[in-house]
Image 1: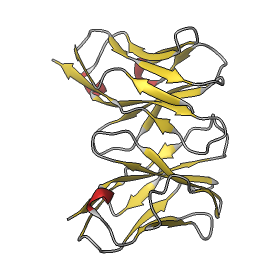
Image 2: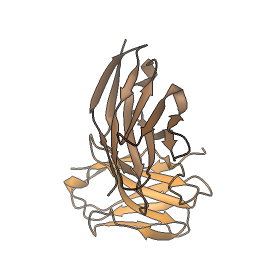
Image 3: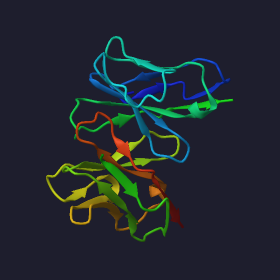
Image 4: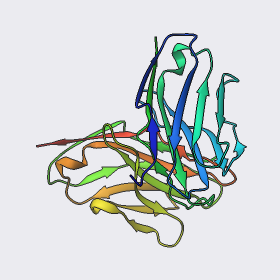
Length: 115
Length: 113
């Protein structure tokens, strides 16, 4: 399809387990964003890539969170030693450029449940 | 810091009646404002955006929003609600100098038959 694709759609992890969430952005989109959406809340910004460069990681809640986009396309969000408070929907978005007015296209998200 | 406040967590209207979802923003600059909709099990979809070209912005599915600087508001409206409009709606600001979007907490729109 032509949209942003995320996998897996659902992930259940035991507390302390490491997880990796994948995002396939729209082909050719240079900007890629990760957001965290807790239950009943709006999405919160985690990190931003322009091509392969991670230009902003100010929203990552702890050093257990790590994101990469090594070839400027697919991105992976990794969470080490998961905690219950990490349970949320993780959303990926991509856009064609960095401008404030550029529309961001969102994937359906990965729902992470830490038990 | 730029932020948005959605004044209602839930709004319930009857099918065929007008919809009003309220949003106030806080910004010391001329903001870029958006409304996104999130249907269950679907990705966030852009409804409309304000980028200072016109204060009345028309979006998809019959929605529109008016930017009112004097009231620091960007309320979303639709003349006649349809059952398919039931969803979560987010008012969003793109803070100047920041890379990500800042979302409001959302308004859950319920359409009564």
